[in-house]
Length: 305
Image (cartoon, rainbow, N blue to C red; front, side, top):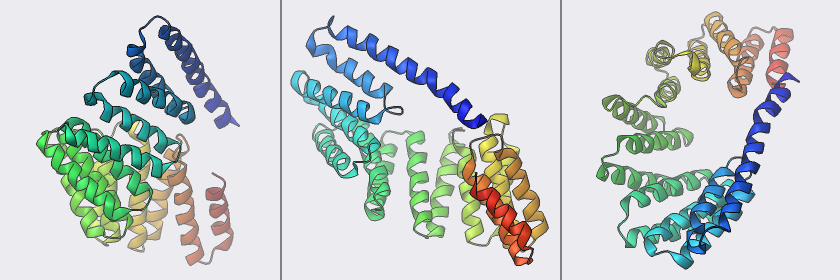
């Protein structure tokens, strides 16, 4: 009950803000020449992207229509991209890809690399969502090449990371490890801290799959030692990873200790996946010990999280 209450407290101001902002921006349309309406529609689309994707798409389409009517081709690629992203958020992936391909064609024709790299990245995301991993890899390799042309290490590291995620998902752990290491090196060489702890946790997962448990411990320990209080989500994931490492080594007592550390941290966050998985792993250990009552208790604790 507390969680639902907190959710309402957090979301109510967001919806209230969105409605107030919408009314204010719509009122400005009457004060501006129609050729300036594109900026208002774009802002409205951005406002509702997370809270109301359908309304975001509505304003995104108005932004596209206005841009095509009043503005030159330099802005058309972005407008098609915006609608493509809106369609992605309403789970219309095929239409989203079509819009993004239109955007890509325009950006290519005018040699707009800054816009093109964003479009290529979006196409990579959509094809990953559609499980078209071969196409995703092709897009991310292009994304990486464009990021190098732009000399943008933030984009470059995200390209390496996304390739790591794809290869891990399809079971090619060695290749996933290669790209995760490239991502981490790029970030550390350029003092990019955002997402670095997640990258190290992903690295640890690769080492577990490869049964290189010493390297897995090092990766998870990096997360714990370089974290702050605000990184509690990733710290919990690191302890869960350490638990899995000990489980792989059949050191069940240490595995349970670390799963419990993860559980205690998850209780104070919305990290329900790691919370449930920690209980499931402890349940598996109790099943191996033929302690079925404890196994059932932990399984149910994980199930109802």
